[in-house]
Length: 358
Image 1 (cartoon, rainbow, N blue to C red):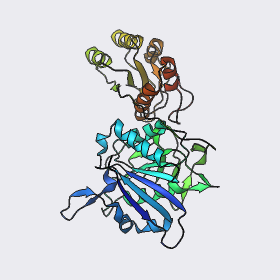
Image 2 (cartoon, rainbow, N blue to C red; image 1 turned 135 degrees about the vertical axis):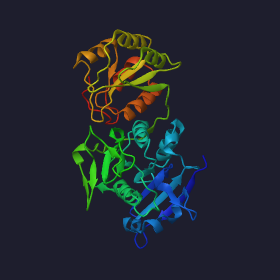
Image 3 (cartoon, helix red, strand yellow; image 1 turned 90 degrees about the vertical axis):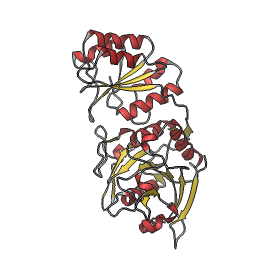
Image 4 (tube, one colour; image 1 turned 180 degrees about the horizontal axis):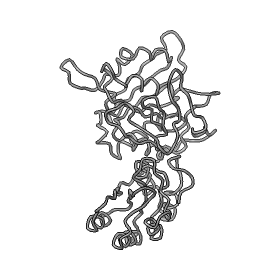
């Protein structure tokens, strides 16, 4: 791809202490109003004019922009491959990475990169904004400034946050635990099933107990095989057998994330249980995920989930739908043994779920 590259040096009087790579994929943060009042891609060569406080960080910044900004609603597998590749290729050159991304699918992208970048030992911070960087009340400046500070933060020479995260509205969240919950307020993301990794105020207060520890000597591996022959089926009262069977019988379908009620409950009608059983017997991978933002699947707690467990539907525990569907795409492409795929679907690969699931 024909990437656009801009190099900036914020260390005006001192020697450079850190280096950060910003990957601009698209999204509101990287937009600005032109003279006619229309939104156009921001010229990152002028970022120091918009955020003069960057000069206080004493870092060198390289910005790699996608040839054309991508609305995050259009993010696809190739974009994930490109993002991960850029990080992998530049891994040894930079202290940390900041990915500027639209908010709508940011949790999907952060989840996927947490699987693709196996052995990651440096910060990869996804961030964005609800208002363009040139807007008076924009949240872009704070989100970007703090993301850069987190990306270079070290203790005893080791990164404080060596994992894929989302920073938004003063909160640092594990990327594969986050979910977008607001479209009109600045607090766009939450992580109901895992505590925040940090909160920014006068200082950045890190929750060290929740951050994945740095692993000495770990080598980064770039795993770029993905399989999108998956789907999400969200249950609702009154769903028909015709709809369910058409979904299960989709040509080429290999995996389904089944969004159930509460702690993993589904209709107990014979036709529903039979449809699930037939699909599993025919080799379809089905993962049970709760519709609740803070939900956790416990198959067998109620009669309405015992049948799912009996017919071979897997429990997703406390995983989010975003982390589940990307994990399924990843495992279906990188594992060939059906038993191994099922085992790994129910265990954490990158901290996306609690160790104990049922």
